[in-house]
Image 1: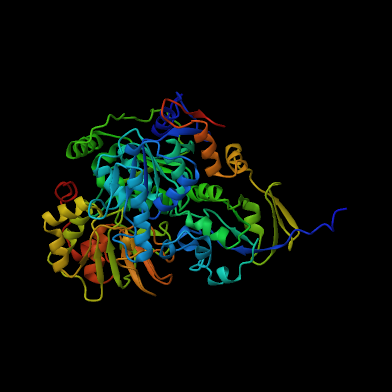
Image 2 (image 1 turned 120 degrees about the vertical axis):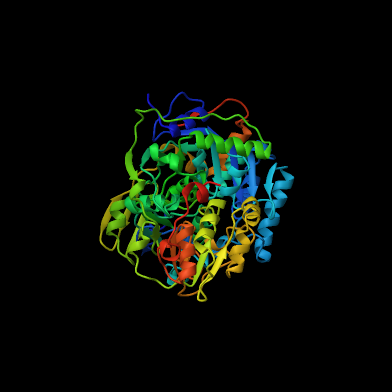
Amino acid sequence: MAQTITEKILARHAGRSEVEPGEIVMCKVDLAMANDVTAPPAADAFARMGVEKVWDRHKVALVASHFVPAKDIATAKLMTRMRSFALEQEIEHFFEVGRGGIEHILLPEEALVLPGEVVIGADSHSCTYGALGCFSTGVGSTDLAGVLALGEIWLRVPESMKVTYTGTPGDWVMGKDLILSIIARIGDDGASYMAMEHTGPGLKHLSMESRLTLTNMAIEAGAKSGIVVPDALTLDYVKARQAENDRHRDFEVVASDGDAHYARELDVDMSAAEPMIAKPSLPSRSVPVSSVEKVKVDQVFIGSCTNARIEDLRMAAWVLGEERVAPTVRLMVIPATQRVWLQANHEGLLDLFSRAGASVSTPTCGACLGAHMGVVGAGEVCVSTSNRNYVGRMGDPTAKVYLANPAVAMAAAVAGEIVHPADVRPDAPARAEALVG
Amino acid sequence: MRPLERRPSLARAWVYSDNVDTDVIIPARYLTTTDAKELAAHALEDLDPQFAVSVKPGDVIVAGHNFGCGSSREHAPIALKGAGVGAVVASSFARIFFRNAINTGLPIVTCPAAAESIEDGNEIEVDLAGGKVRDVTQDLTFAAEPLPEFVMGLVRAGGLVPWVRARAAAGEVAAGPRGGVVS
């Protein structure tokens, strides 16, 4: 029977020749991940499961990302709980402050997630890893504890939605704009319980960074997972990360059969795409930024697992140029990982942002979830490169959050209001030069 | 002789719309604890400040589509359970919240007809074993969608923790080539 990439990966991890959407299978897990919010309850649940040691200490990643550096005594306690669990279980991949960053950008950089694998993360944006051609999904802490104990998890095989890209993206269009426009088309639960599979001839124009943004926001359409069928760019990326980390593990490149069954198919003509912005308070309220009336902005946040990679910072820097942050705006820039921070520093981007009047911080999820490092106040308007603009997500419930790509976000920081990036910087960057570093 | 048959206690319906996300169920600023009572004090406060102060044990949340979308925080079902919520009845649930509710013992009922019909403040009875939702105020009864058999097995086992404990005790840890269909 013809199978999708997702069905093939799950079948192989369930010891089966094939699986069908809707059936529930036990799948072996290649990597289990938790962060400082989800690891402590997972450690507690694990203790109640009567198992002494995690099933494989080499296949667990614990990443300090959310309330880091600790903002108060309560969050310091979360960190110490995660740290003591990591040490007592001799977890090989434990990333402390200063040596890690946001897990969804960190693990691909570290070559810890590879094509064809099954990755389970105790964080909803664990769907991000699918950009490398693996099955990856988010769960809660108790489910993660079950994986730590057994090395496997029950999964309902998802139906697949096929998104086919054609054309070449125009100026200022990034992965963020494509996924926001898809969510606007299908709704906040338009891919509910499904695997959102991204494919088509247009994909070759999308950098790994943009692809990681596509899969990152699968959850904002209710999807179980997002996945990109690996191509030459994927393999170049993965091999380079393996060499950089001297971390070599075999992997399997899996592709969908041509006649595989899809529950739904969507076509995306990238040449017609525009920079988008999601109005408060749902990602599905995305519209072309050119259609938005000017809205005054109090804070701009360039960061999060969605858009804080080097490509994103380069794009933001391009829009900023020699301009300054508008006097009425606070701009927070948070590079996603230590590597991204160092690279941005090396390229002079952090200096550029700082001189323009931005606050640049150490890697953390921070402001995205209203945790710290940029909590938004009552009635304020924030343009954010993150993934959720729900009520209260970034701070006060009366704040209004707009989601956009880093070019749109930086344009708002410079103009002091929501504008098209071309209104601030008439010339778009040459794609090869600015977007693929 | 049996004492007088006790009428099942009536619960109030707290009705909300589509896409009630886990950030409004329990905002991230309270994720510094996993204590159910502490979390319960802030349950739904950004959506309905009256909820946490007025909810009574056994009350039922009734909502539209995609209940529990967003973050994977298990603190969300723990907060609702800690607030005494007897069940959440919704047209549909986001999948991570669905798993978390099963794993933390918060009863959830998928029932679009009930979700569309029940009005805020109505008196509700939820029969979990029988899969029925009754709107006493309107004198209407709705049949809930059954849980998958595998998930019912988890519920019968007492949740994921005892289920895993039993499998681990039986030596069913993924060391060798194993796996397969379970339902």
